[in-house]
Every structure is written in structure tokens, then in C-alpha cells.
Image (cartoon, rainbow, N blue to C red; front, top):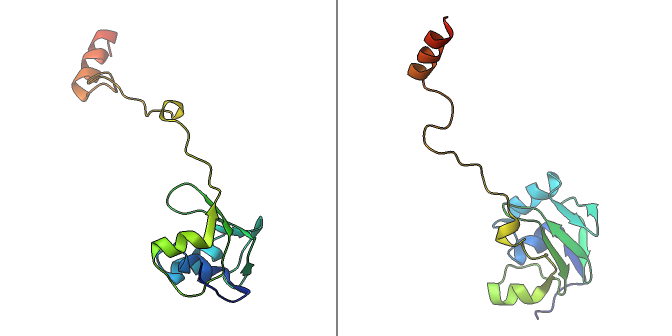
Length: 124
């Protein structure tokens, strides 16, 4: 693992270990409340050190990582994964995911023509 300082800013660390694409995105995620350090909402300047738990909500499910090494410069993916332990729970099995409701063709709302026929049958 790369050696670094004892602590650094959370936005810089999240960007360096490739949890966000840019440092600006990491800072805006902090300001929006999408990054938590040890359960507390983090500002971009919040310090992280070895052993801290960082939760990042992004496009996908929430990532839960524990800091194993503090780095300030962006590194390649193989080195980045050595800097944290990923405690993110596995996704639920596919059979437990609710499927979107699907209707047979024509089983949805009646068309305008069908509504007129229904109105004629009802005597309107």
C-alpha cells in the first residue's frame, strides 16, 4: 500500500481511491449529504484517517468502505482497491427484486375509439 499522510480531506481521498470521477464531484456529493464519515454527514474538508468508515451514495447502491491507507493523489485501480476495505453488502438475489408490471397488448387503457364504443353501449 502507498504511504501517505496521517489524515486528509474526505473529498480528496474519495477522489484519489476512485469512488468518484472528479474531485469536484466528490466535493459536491459531500455538500449534498451523499458522503458520510463514521455515520456523520461530511463536509468536503472533513478529515479521514485509517480505520474510518466512509459511506458514498452515488449512481448505484451505497458503497461502504473502511479506510486502510490515506492517499492524496489519484492512483490506478489496482492500487486504489488496496487503500480501502469494501464492506458493501452484496446486492439482493434477482428473484427478490420486484419486476415492473407488464400488461398484454391492448390490456391497458382503452383507446379513443374503444371509449366511444363504450359510451355508445352505455347510452351516452
